[in-house]
Length: 271
Length: 250
Ligand SMILES: Nc1ncnc2c1ncn2[C@@H]1O[C@H](COP(=O)(O)OP(=O)(O)O)[C@@H](O)[C@H]1O
Ligand SMILES: [Mg+2]
Image (cartoon, rainbow over all chains, first blue to last red; front, side, top):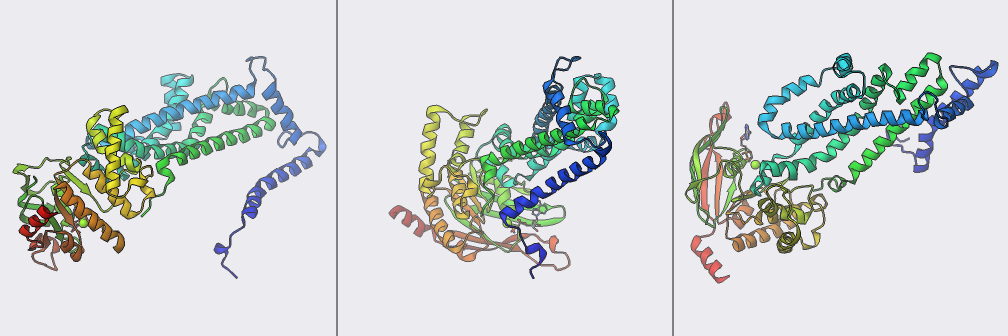
């Protein structure tokens, strides 16, 4: 009898086994919802047809108050917040991380400060952000940047520190100036890590978007979820949660593919 | 021309003395091989010659002038590992130095200048036997090929001095022999002074025109860091006259 850690499923078996928990979860839900719905429609566990009708209303009917199709307006609002927040965070992380990581005087000046700064819990300062930047988009963007940029900065700095000393010395013997090393040695080597770093920040970014939208917004996936919560509208909340998950998965996948498409990350370090 | 002089050079880290009062004159076009046990301070010696580290006391001169306090193109280097840029292709690596020199802001050449440099880089790759690998990335090369590339990259700058820190230490014996041949050829073609560190005595005597051994002058088992290394032996491996005759004939 082989040890259990040495027994591997076949390819087909793997796919089947991977799908199994999903199928099981849906089946259990459908079964439980059916049982509960026996005596009239149920608010907490709506049947599958309740989802389709709620979602088709949000996706295809124009909302009278806002003049938009709510589902798409919410999606766009949240994705725009997320994209702007992540984009600014990545840019700040790259520029500051590279400069502070590579230039000893800047490192001496800022490293302790960033280490302390990154420990501030962003949600705890959310009220401050609302007071300083108002209840509009600015405070939401600042929250995401505040929550994510310190992590990206530190990750980029770590990657800069990982560049072998030999390469930096070699570059200097090839006549490189500090600027040329930043442009031609540090940036290209840090870039793949930046993408991974953004990828790892996706979960936190969604958290901050939804938290900010829960408190104040006019549209957004998180805003909608917290709005309909008052009516216990599970038929909206559950599909929205699934949709957010799907969006997060798609972004994660896209970033992973981008990372793996960089030629110098495609080949593993060899002999 | 590259005459290297160490004048009473010492190096210590804190109260650990690594090298003690080292004086050494390396003639122009010498191939100096440095041997010694691990931890003797061979790499430290090379780092000082490279200006990656500063001597704690004493000074180092090339052709009578103190070396610049930071690494410069007059001294090329090949380390045992990590000597090439992993994010540039093979030919990109060879073009890097000249591109940096020619284009201070972008670090890239374009158009005709680029074509000229590319042709020169391709010649250099052909010379070291990597002509067919120009478009690959370093990680796709074998260890020996990566070292060939590192040498080619350094030679594009026409350094006065080439510094090698156990460059073939990680290679298998066959590859190592081929590298020895290449290095000797390049050394005589480029007329440089070479300083090579190795822990392989036969390699030292095969390549070097002069071989020095560095080791601690005294071993105190209770305070091993109290004594630094000095030059314990110094051989003329190939008499100068014979070498000059061989060069004149070849
Ligand atoms: N940056 C440093 N700080 C402290 N000690 C160092 C440093 N670099 C080297 N040493 C010490 O100097 C000694 C010689 O090191 P090294 O020159 O690398 O030896 P070798 O190359 O001959 O094996 C070792 O004992 C090492 O621990
Ligand atoms: Mg060493």
